Length: 254
Image (cartoon, rainbow, N blue to C red; front, side, top):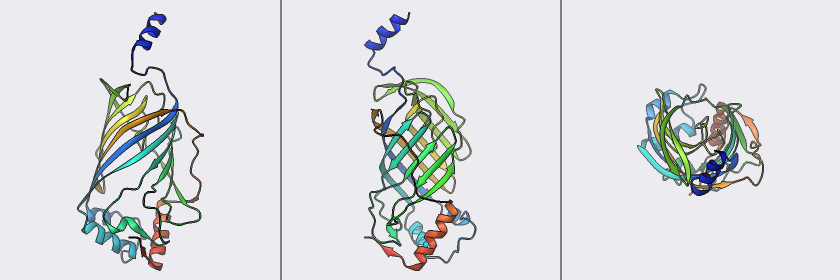
């Protein structure tokens, strides 16, 4: 029997051998509709509503009923760990180009380290001129996926369907059991194989529709996956730092 399995594996163009590390290039399309009143009602405690940052948020959200953009995301995966590099979208609103530190590269995005075994994440904030970047630690919530007995193929890999539904999140994912990794982009890991396609609808402070589509897959990594290094702060601490810098003197990058 094992010889028959090997024979059909050589004949079948679909990849059957397990892989543990590599890089996936996703095209990520995001459609976002912002409920400004809900965002304002859920600001962290201690945020002064008369700050420069809040004033710019008000102007931006009032002129931005919705946004639709596509970026490239690279996911370097190894087992339960991943490092993602996300390009910065070319948004038309002025808020995306505010920098209290001077000019910065608008094509540079965030870098995020994900450990789905330890359920932790470390995000390096987009560099805006600091000599040492800030990093924010967070927790990853494991999704209780429902595996569906439906098959397909993506990039020559056999994939299966999985679904997750909660009050604020609905996800349909297609994962490759032949790629031995429980990692995934953002929070979309914990599957018995690497996800190559994800459609998600997030309904919290705003309505966000996201689509991840794998465009290429490369086996192996040039270097080990390691967390980004920087000054560790919480989200609340980083927001306060940004508001203090903005109140000192905002610079706008054309």
